[in-house]
Length: 263
Image (cartoon, rainbow, N blue to C red):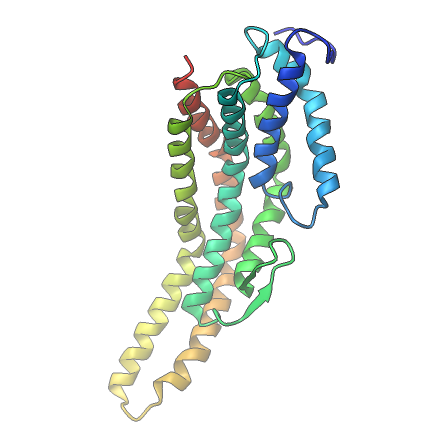
């Protein structure tokens, strides 16, 4: 594939600019870090314009013919961008779900703070897990992997191809459903430890009926949950890195479903 210089006046170049910006905007809507509310809208708009100009020669070289601006093409490119961003958002969302599960089982679900990134009230452990996952994503160059996947998607699924949006939407929903699987993997050790502690407290309540179980259960739940979480965090990082490795497979699956109807 021969990549030429940026030429906005070439045949099909204006349509390619619109279609490419639609794909990049789709990624920016859901991708971690890029979609953060802490990033000003002007900065996000500037990033979209910058990526559009930089990737435009690649999009023109990968297109089999001069791109034509159509509604199906805009929708297909937006779904392709959503697939690139959703693959990474699943990992961060799974960590936040894990934090919420840990908060519920540890008795800390009432301890909520305002998340400055999403402006929603979330449990403290959910916010901690979210920041932990974002930090790991940046440490493992996940943000660069998203940009690389966006560039490679132009070769797998050229701009303006259209494709099958229903199949792509179904694949995106399936990808989003894996959030709970990832979250359960992260929260599994803590949930199991708290469950064992609850069973032990229940057995203790049966042996000593005069014991006020509620006054004992809450501090034990919190202590076991926090101790297990602190012990499990070092082992969660390799698990997270393993899920980052499946990021490309998830994106390829959605792009394949999207491009299946366009061939």
